[in-house]
Image (cartoon, rainbow, N blue to C red; front, side, top):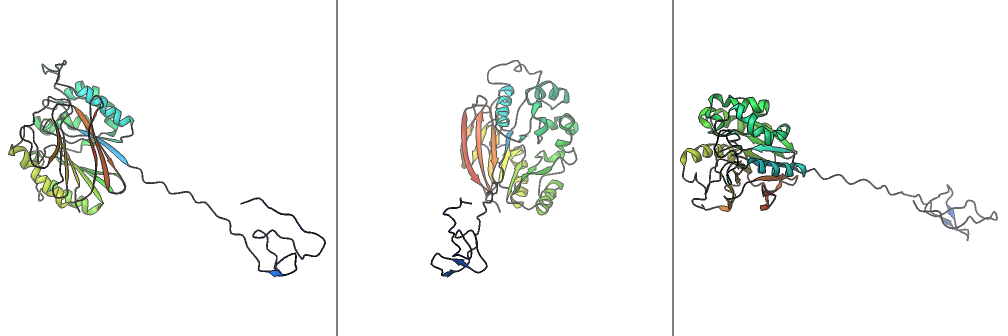
Length: 331
């Protein structure tokens, strides 16, 4: 409200003294000339606070991580067992605000024993355990019931009978944590327990954007190119994911980073760069937009409220090697 301006005009000639637009008399405002004017009522302007934009949420993902403590390379042969450097980069992303860490399988070599998890993985990545949402790789299932994996991660990993889980990191987004070791979990096809769970979950929680994480990639230019044992597992889950409206799929298994052109509305990232020895690029297949096989690192994916996402793949020394933006397109 502004300051009052002008002065009161006395002498008894006016029925009331006013400052226009702020004071109104019941008989009307009276001008110095004696003409009656319409009453004016002030309408103060209220400044309402602007609503805050919905907060974006970032997850960090990488698979194929910690070396076996009995490996001859464990003590530091260059190009092998670089999980400590990757853990430092994950820590940088977390320090910058990332809220979730998603290990993409083959988290602890060679067989996922609990003692190895405690001796190696935990020393580098244990500090992220409270924000970790893991998926199992084939190496976790090399021992019966993937017992070391489920013992180490506890409830965050689900159970051997039902390892699939789901959560919503923010409004408009849902994350599906799946298991592509189909023979151990009752199958991966749409009619399997896992496939039916995916369908029921998305029916119960319809949302604009869906991200799914599992270990085996459908497409790869790396050493698993043409290996049907890997791609067939992924194909079954891919069918279920597509029907459920999944927009982004995160995988590991092949020890490289690869980003593909969306296929049927689904964007695939392979992030098998967690520390184990890298795999070579064998045949860069159609649709591969970026492939890196000689650097370790992690992917940060930021989910936005407008059904878009930003991604950044950073090497273990912090170098940004790939980045961009995508949108949810699989309806």
